Image 1 (tube, rainbow over the protein chains, first blue to last red):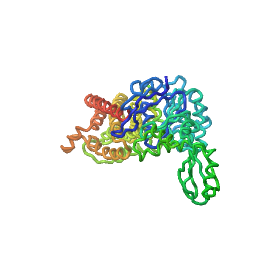
Image 2: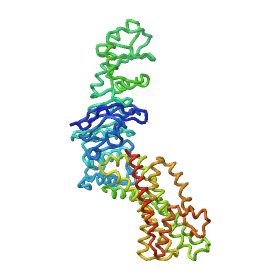
Image 3: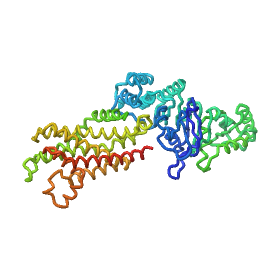
Length: 318
Length: 241
């Protein structure tokens, strides 16, 4: 049984289809749902946490249907929305203790102390939240979410608006929870974080999953290296197998190459033959940003995006 | 229902930690009590303070309830409601916790007003009479806080609700039996006053003060409260899932 299982999950807001027949299985991993604003990330999380009724399809958390067995579902999950809702007039301990009591766990006082110390907030536990930084507030929300030892943790934009250090810390805690066997479902805008910390990534655009795999597999799917050459002079077209010019700008040319290492000397030679001097060459692997822009960037003008078609298109270009 | 007391405790701590809001909500009814109750020259009664104290107690409950209408709306706007709704705690506890907190808060404020009234010369009643008065005030509090919460959930944003609150509170007070008995009112006002739920509470508190048991008014408050709480639960379900 998977921790999260959706089949044809669909949500309409009036005529707008926010989530369009989404089918997903997530189990025992950190799963990131990536997507531009308004792509249906939060709507998906709201349906999975029983806060919104789907129009079509179904979803189950830990084997319980989100529509008909809401209370069983809620016993097994924790949800941290992106709003950072902690009571600023209450202390850290009071905020967590409230949740410990609401969850009805057997030993609320000790559990509160325990999760606060896991989140490294013990020395500030009795201060009002008013005095907490953004990162500390987020960690306190994680502490609230952990008091009842959920099987599945939903985090909506867990690191939004936080500085680099605070983000690292949050992700460190999320990794630790994952190691202890928790399934974690996050939504995020930050590609580098999804790349670095998540086991699997789903890219959602206009309510549909357009790419779904591990970050490295998605990058490998692009099957390209990105090469940038700084040149003096005005080169014409370069004809090398497997190399394509992406763009020219201010004495800089960008190529994609199936095999970058082999393409580097070929590009230099081809440009030399045209009497163009190459002053520097750099090559990088595609990042998740490139993957994201490739699958999502086109949707605005294409209207309807088809990932399969996109992959076929990529292959044909070789 | 599980969770209700926890939700009440949360709101209570938050309220008591902002002394400005605790005191500011008492200023208006205290001012009415002192500047109108002690100063207005009226001929229909010898002790106007005794006549107006029930009105001010009910007014205190009313303004506490109307102000409390924003509490659930802010929990919704700020994201607390979604966190609470994702808990295995019964969802209605959130709503009942709110209505009970607003009512208890109103009763605490009414107690302070009652003490002030006695200090400046209102007649001291028997414990049974005070018990009756509190019962009426609590019933009225349930009715009005459920009403305010329903309307704020329906309107959905703070500005509209603040406008509604300003629009409703004074007319509701002036068109009730708060300031004068029915027999000295002009006929048109008397009709309106008889329909105003505020009058039921005020008349009931006055009756309790004279030693009678106002069964009719208490019954009306119970029925109206029941209906409004049912509507409020419907509204709450509609805005949540």
